[in-house]
Image (cartoon, rainbow over all chains, first blue to last red; front, side, top):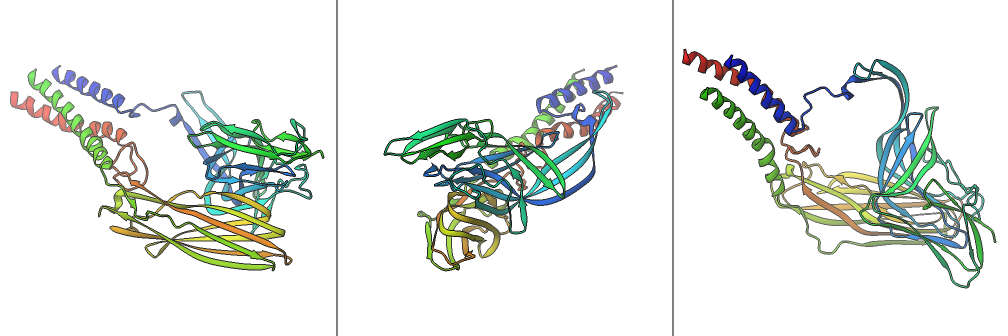
Length: 257
Length: 223
């Protein structure tokens, strides 16, 4: 009898200790999910980290040495990958720029089984994820035939033996306009608060050895202070502006006159 | 009855001492490790400027900084390094320029960064992600970190161009590493790559047979 009580006491102490130190002695629901990789293939890609556009007869200015995180959500299951970086682009006079890092992407076809806690179920998932980041970067102009408009900017590049992801960078529709009739430059400031999104939901597609996943990418400010970017417009010209993505921080331009 | 309570108290003491051994003492030791210091008061800023009217050019230069590790317990430190830079490249025609940074710590090559800069008009700057130096490469006292930089540039046709690479500073950041030296910031360790908060109840469960044996000893002694 006493022995039984003692062991009960011990058991209670163990449970208490487990709760105190956050130990997962009780199997979690997550543990009931099992994944099997059916097929995988890899390819090194120039992965877009950040892009910046400048108006013709204008410039984009900002502070360098900022901290960014680029988040990718690719495929029907929005598989997440992220890359941290801290390069700020400062294009001038319509000469738009993009900054890439060489990353190893992997396509996986995964068989997922779940149960018994949530009921038995199984399905296949297509996933595109970054599995490795290399110490190779590439900064390039991405203006197309003309620096007067971003409507022909490059959305796919290839160099040094690797291809880039395909990403949205072109001017398509007018979201706002800027007119500078004055003799001085005018300035428009965009900001993103500390740890907030700079650009979000910009279309991107990743092709890994002919397996193509579409999705979005976004850029976040990872610093504890407000990110500030200035679009500056030269005198006696006018422009149409298209916001790239769902925030209003990354602009693409079309010169009116 | 008292003996049984004594065993329960003993078990609690065991849990407490386990917590002190695995969490409290290492946390305190980790917190009080002396930090690595960068001994260079002035950082070696450098400007590599090239003005060319040809098709190709190249340039190389080296920079060096030093830092000190104030303890022989090299495994206890994480020394991260990178560099801050800015580029201003202007060319009449499309130009492909490659910057290669080779980092050497105490003469041993530890990292190579390649940055391709392609276009006609590019201004940008920032820094590269920090990486850590292996503890085997570090030494007690003064350490050196050198950056050998090579720039090559080419264009399909001869054109006017200017290229400015400014290295603002070589970053050396250092701090105490987790005590098991695996670089993984476990909740607090010294147990290699194991979350110590999870290890304690596991150890507590595994020690249960000891207390069963003690209990039986008491029982047989009572008889």
